[in-house]
Structures are given as C-alpha cells and as structure tokens.
Length: 519
Image (tube, rainbow, N blue to C red; front, top):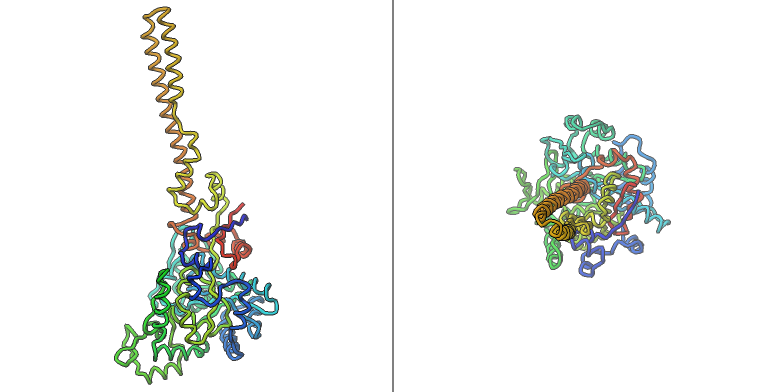
C-alpha cells in the first residue's frame, strides 16, 4: 500500500475555516481553548476536572449498556477497567446511527480517535487514554441514517417508527437485508438479534473496532442524565444559551459562515415514539406538535425525577458529553469543527472545560485498477483533485508536440511535382497536364490521409478522456469526496485489511489528507 499525504487546501474540498484552523490562524484563537497539539494535552489534563463520583456513574452506565454485547473483547474490558482510575482520560468522536455504518467518514472518525489515544499513551505513559464513540441515539432525523451506498447502489430501510432513532426496533430490517447482493454476517446478526438500533450499532462497532479498545457510549441514559440536570434547569428557566451562542456566532460571522443556529430553548422532550422541541409560551412549557403542556412547577418536577425525558440539541449535546466523560479532545468532521467554534461561551458559562477540537482524518482510497489508470494518464496524486475540464486540457497538453498536420509534407510534394513538371516540359510539353493531374491526386490522397490521422488522434484523446471520466467517477462519486458517499463494505469486501490499512496510515495530529493507493 502506497501512502501519500497532501495539504487539505490542495484538495479544494474543505472550507476556509477548516484550513485556517489547521494553520492556527489568529482569527480563530478566541473560539477555542487550546489547539490540539501533542504538547498541549498536558495542560488539558491538568484543567479537566472529573470526580470519583462521576467516574463511578460513568462506569455503572457503561457496564449496563454493554450487557447487550456478548463476549466483550479483552481490549474493551481493559479500557472499561482503566476508566475507574483518576489518571485515565478519554478522546471522543460522535456520530449518528447510520445503518451499515453509513458513509466512510464514520469509520475515519473512529480510527482517528483510536490512533489519537495510542499517540497520547506514547507521549504520556503515566496516564491512560480510552477512545470513545458517542452514539447519537437521541437523534430523530431518521432520513439521515436510514440509507447507505454499496458498490454505487443505494439501499434504504423503510419504517414508520418515530422518535429517537436509537430506540427503533430493527425487526423490520429483514427486507433490506434480503435485498443486498450478498450476505454480510456481522450486520445480519447485529440487526436480527438486537432489540434496538442502538444495541445493533454497539454490536457492530464492537466487532469492527473492539480489538482496538473502542468504547461506545449511549447518552440516552437515565443515570448519565442526572449530571445534566443543572444545565436542563438553567436552559428552561433562563434560556441563556441562545444569547451566548449568538454573541460568539456574530463574531465568527465576521470571517466565516456559522454552522448552527441556537433556539430560545435548546432541548427536546423525549419519550417513547416522541422527540419534539420544548418552547415557552405564556408562562407554560409546551411540546411542539403535541398537546403536552407543563407549568413551571411541573417542569421542575420532571427535571428532578425524570431528567432522561430531556434531550439536548446540537447546542447542548457537546456540553452534556463533556460533563459525563473525562474527555480531552473531540474529533469531528468539518461541520462539527465549525459549530464547536460557536460553543465556547456555553462551556464557560457552565464551568465545563472546553475540549480540544480536532479535524478527523480524511482519505482517498485508490484500488489497483484505478492506480493503473492514474499512472497511464500520467496524473499525480494532487492532479486527481482538479476538475475534469482542467485535467482534459492537461492531458491534451501532453500531446501538443504530436498535433497532426501534413502541411510540411504537402509543400515537399508540391516542390517534387514542380520539378517533374519542368522535366516533362523539356521532354514532352503535352505531359504537363498528366503531371498536374497526378499532383492533384497525390494532394487529395494526402488530405484524406491527414483527416484519418487527425480523427485517429482525436479518438486517442477520447479514450484518454473516457478513462479520466471513469477514474473521477470512481474516486469522487457524485462529484464529491469518496468518504461522503461510499460505504465501508464497498472496500472491505475486496480488501479485508482495509481497516488495518487505515489504522496504519492515519495520523490525526498530522493534519494532512491521506491517500492510500494499492500497489
């Protein structure tokens, strides 16, 4: 496997905020706590506060959640034990419960997190670091998780279930499983033998990444929500998050486009088959699209007795996460890095340490046939990220010296026939017309030959252009990065070592785009 690293800017696929963040542009300094460099983690550890009681609650919740996983891998069990120690920290990524793991960037997020934990252990051997996957089980946007693309073909799961997707029963997935081109035992067993999508996703990530010690956590947990009660109460009574986020977003907007918008109340009401926004109207708390209404006294009783009925949105979910984990860094995609830049004020107001925010690794995987096409077209790795029109011009430029014209040969033939005409006039002037006719026939033949050569040359370009178009479609499906469309199985089916290849190639602290090319 040949590994190449290129600058994110060179891909043209990332926003200016991301490339400026990686470059540590001073414009962004007010929007984060510490830049995620290896030497800065010591100060982050010193600042992060996480009590023994918080650890106990975390461990109890994780043990309860992992009860649905049979035969927990030794590396995960070890990390669950390590979390009991005050010198153990986490590094975390989060993602929706996309079926069959969804687009490749889900896998890239997790591998970036696993590798960061390894790098931290090497740099700070006196401490331990656990990679964590925060499952977005409370998300209710089913349309974002119910499909995936396998070998270029989309597949989707249809169900009329409502509410938090993590609570969805997977019983109705049989039709989807039957429609796949072949059997995928891991996924079939997970979806047919797990009660919910959350349980199935934990089983899948454990099977894929358990050997690397990945711990998956479900925030839809009554005990974990106990720690979140002060934030719930403050949000409902004061609606302070909106002002804090808006102040930061206005400053960010001077240079970049903010990613998210804050609401007056950044909480949902969560129940079976229900996750709807909470609003305050005429002194009453109402659940949108329902008849549910609560007085201030009733809402306070709910907070105290059933905090699990309150679900944070994108504004408060990061805060909740950092309150229940001894976390040092959050690894996310471009959109996540952007909206985390809008949240520092919320963290400061609630007295919670803002984590280091890191951009996950991104990659382009080039199979052996596509690697051969790239080399045949004489394209560099950086060339692949150029648009097709520019690459066509580049390919044509390689053959400029072969531009076909027989003009020089035509003049030579004219000169030869002039000499023959002179000779004919000396021998027999009546032969001049015959010579002229032969000269014209020769020129006509030359013109026909030139047309054939030009057409053949154009056909050669068309072959190159066809190869180029096919290569771009394979490497950039739908005109976007491979990782945003293709599924893990598209690559792992043909390369069982795909995940291990990524583990060996990714360096989350390097801030480079990774290209893996089969040799």
